Image (cartoon, rainbow, N blue to C red; front, side, top):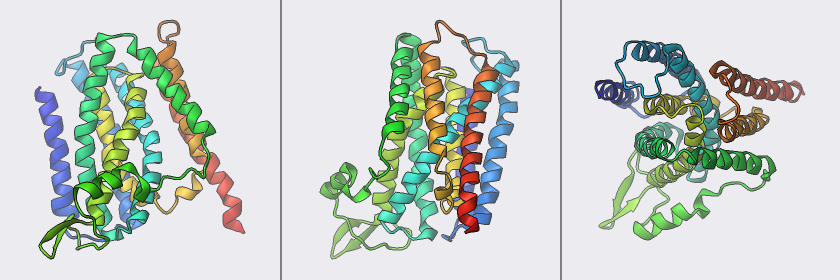
Length: 316
């Protein structure tokens, strides 16, 4: 419990410093600033694998699977890379939502900040119940594996023109029935009063839609990491570090998303691999280093191929 409380306290401290100190005044986050913070979060995420090694080597955390420190660190890094790669699709959707609701750039960080707080809570609940199901009913491993394989096949055959329309979504319609929605923003406020009535601003609507979409993405990502490990702390910490780095990564990649056309295929390969690993775990044992290497190579290949294919267009 001390480890869990310390970890959550550190995360809340980071977030408090983020909103209360570093981003106290709403401003447009430049690519340079976003790149710096992306580097910081990725570095911290990988350095945390050293903390994992220490925790599991000194028995400061409950270790029901008897994981060796090195194995625990590799599982954490593998899970982090899976969450990071699947977050790319989330960035695409966030960009669409902000564009649909015309959220000014300088207020986008505030929406993502509160969105991350909600994501931590919802991911925590999904991880808790996911681990509970796998530990109590071993057959759910096959269920999760089949679901991931189905998701990969669906992604491969999905049509690019089937774009997400936030204002046509079920969530938007439900919000409109609960509280009136205005198209006007009032600085960074989520609500405004007009003629004695309270209205939800586009910032609040965008926040709720992003929150719901994150839950839907978690339906894919949580089972994917459960294929690597069912250790609650490893699953939760790798998830949280990927989520924390998502904001800065969004501002860093938002203007370059078009260059990563082939990254979708990397995600399909990763989901297929993880799904097959879950389905065959009783028959084939894949070493942890092999899983990590495969996922890292698949992700890197998609990025490099996308950048290579976009070069001729830049030269024209």
